Image (tube, rainbow, N blue to C red; front, side, top):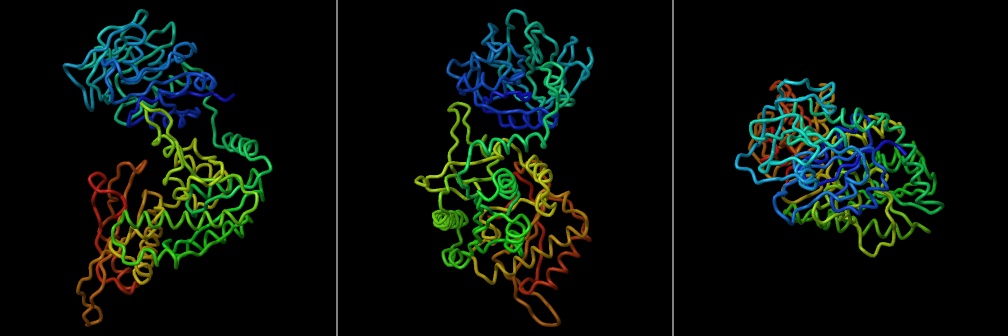
Length: 515
């Protein structure tokens, strides 16, 4: 069995970052809620366990605790923030509500040498770390000692070297902690003995074997959107089971310019994957006519997609499995630290949600991967960079980039403006620097002067952001000359637009998409 580090999640907002840092080190990492069945934890045969942070107080009696199996396995343990506190409390120490709290940057004083700090931090050195705690450890369990302190945390880092138990009050997983990624690497490689050999090539082979074992000789259908996630899932499954897979591509008429043709060409022609292409654009546009509320648009699109997909799936004989490009963040976001695994078929899946009576089992080969890892897998599978590196695109498509009612005329205008914008970004060599870029057609017309004549046409808004995960984002700092060139091109090349504006709002307070 491959090296594995388990993360026991207590509901921290940054638990996923722990997994990302370890996977970047070449160690396979899995997140499990703190309510996970102990047998499942033991069955994973982990090389080590990390206890995450969390929003609760260990000083209260009814808050989550680490399952006892964590301490019975005899493997190294690293407790982070809440994880440190509950580990200390469960092993005989004491945690008290804080009289002084630490939030944000803090100065860490390394007081002792430790295997945890080996090759990372030297004794008596000082480092900036990121804290987020009110409670604090007030007394250590037997066998523990202090190895680092801060102004607000006299037990900022502790260890029981004999049992290979370590606890830190700060968060090494966030970028604000200097050397935090190296600290996690040292725990995984130096203390837990992981080889750091986990790779996407190995994952590919393991996933293919798992798909074959799960599916057997049955038929599988895949809800194909043409985006990165569903495309990678489809190619991976096809590599595993060949013509047992049929992809169903529902064109809702809300895609960008040329995308439907690209999907058909790539999957139906290049990969020779059986593909059912359903052009349902007329039905979708009819149902969206006169609808302005963005949430109502989403509901109409989701319900209509389900209706069409379910009808097409019923035409495929002996289909027993549904394949989807569900990612690890989708899974984790459905897990409650207090309530355990709550994974269900929800609207975040590629097919936009499925009816309860749809008698298909799920095949989700990407559910252990993050978005950037899916891109790596796509490259490993030989998908073209034009697809693998494509910016995120919302399931409802252009419907949420047209505030107000949707008409075929508006869609045509927006497609043309968006194509010009993305073309300019690619020509400038900026596409890969930007997380997401797109045009929005505003429900506003303004007066302009074009060819000595009065015009009265739409305003187009441009949006481009940088981000690492989409949770927060900053507007991309184009130089003014670039924006001027793009605006000129759009006004000249796109009939129906006479004014262009650029959105500089960050997330928060705004969102990335307009709706």
